[in-house]
Image 1 (cartoon, rainbow, N blue to C red):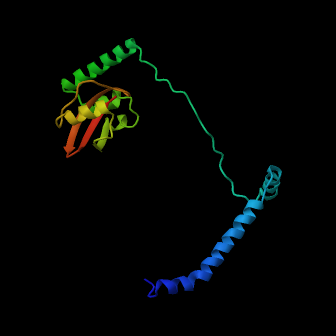
Image 2: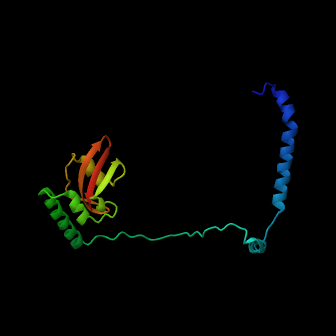
Image 3: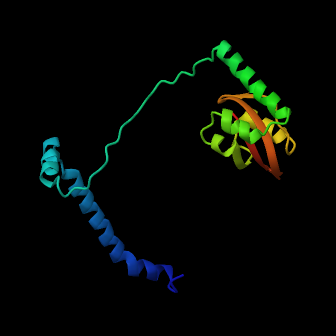
Length: 168
């Protein structure tokens, strides 16, 4: 590779490698003999506080999260409201108008429930199974997911991507 024999390469680099190993050994010996007390660290910090870069505070955070079980009365009332919206859509109502008026999804309600084009794997299982099972223009039944109840309309399909909107 260098255009030299192995013995020639060893001879040429022997002194350089020996010096590097010696420097490494001296460095390790010096570092092992250095000890810094807590007080010395604090004194250094106080002395150089002005020139040290500002480091934002970091916090460790833990929490206990308990998913509340929905009240059956509230769930029943929500399902009734969703059913009346679905009935109105089937009677010829405009899906986008109902989404703007009734959807609680802050990310899509202002745009008529439009979710844009998405591929498989983006939505939660129940939502995805429903939306990929619809035909273009078709409106789903009421779908329950971990995020609540949804009415879904498929606007378009391109291979493994769908363009949908929903009322949540």
